[in-house]
Image (tube, rainbow, N blue to C red):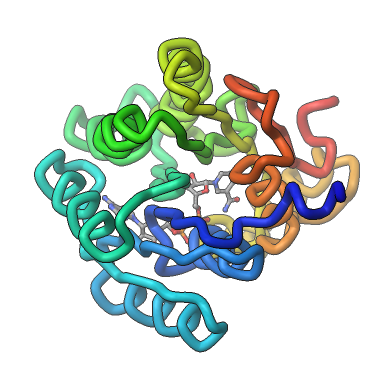
Length: 256
Ligand SMILES: NC(=O)c1ccc[n+]([C@@H]2O[C@H](COP(=O)([O-])OP(=O)(O)OC[C@H]3O[C@@H](n4cnc5c(N)ncnc54)[C@H](O)[C@@H]3O)[C@@H](O)[C@H]2O)c1
């Protein structure tokens, strides 16, 4: 039956940055579809709370204090996940940061801070989990890009973020190509403005909010829960012939 293909029953998924915002929602969505969850999060206060919420839902969960910028930390996370659950079926690279800085003023350390989390962090997690998936000859990876990897947002200046997310989209295609022979599918989601701590404050700022809403055909930000079903689709057998693709979920922002 077609809905059976969306089931994640018996599967184990890693979600980076699962302590809050979209990452927390993705943990819940995957758990509701039947998966056990590894919350790989740098925030030692929020990560365990998400793991406890997942256990309260009846699925198993493990919090691993993880810095996606650090290859050693990422490998330790993979080792702990495999020690507890025996396998990782899917990886969601969600951790990300943004800075609003004029390109002519940004310091190299500020530039690197964004690239380190949003691009190098995604690559390090793909590499460490990918090696495990190659050995198992199966796996699915979902990278959280952004519509900012396809268009340039206004009025804010965020060149580092835009460039990092464009790179995530092409990294997704590159890994999909390299790892298709290993039965690993790699796809991305490009959200528009979502109602989380990262974007919500700006909707109340007159310099931003009106411009943003005017640019969205649906005239509202997205709610985090509106991305959950897309993530379950990409993590599950429902998307079995799909790889290297970026699914845009933006209320129509990128059609104008
Ligand atoms: N909110 C939006 O409008 C929006 C739109 C498009 C894309 N995105 C992307 O979605 C993802 C989640 O965004 P959000 O709005 O939930 O952000 P958020 O700031 O609410 O949450 C990000 C999470 O990542 C964690 N994190 C940060 N650095 C980390 C690191 N080095 N290692 C491990 N974890 C780390 C944080 O502790 C936090 O829990 C990001 O990649 C973001 O770029 C967000």
